[in-house]
Amino acid sequence: MSGTTVRISNRSAQILKKIAKQKGKSMQNILDEAVEEHRRTLILKEANVSYARLKNDSSLWDEEKLERDQWAATLTDGQEDSY
Image (cartoon, rainbow, N blue to C red; front, side, top):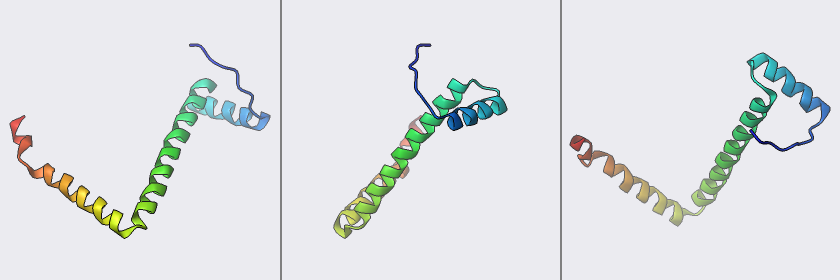
């Protein structure tokens, strides 16, 4: 696997080493998992901010609720019987 060298603080390196030992994984694997988790957290935070902004505009929020209701109606359209 190719990689890139990244400098981290001694404190972070020690924490990373401790977690890797506890989990029985490589430091690289633990770091990869941490980066992925952070990426996912950022996506969720951005989505929450966007929904909050949308909810603050009553006309846009009403449109959002209507669209969700329309999509929800497709769950009972009988198509699941055709599988």
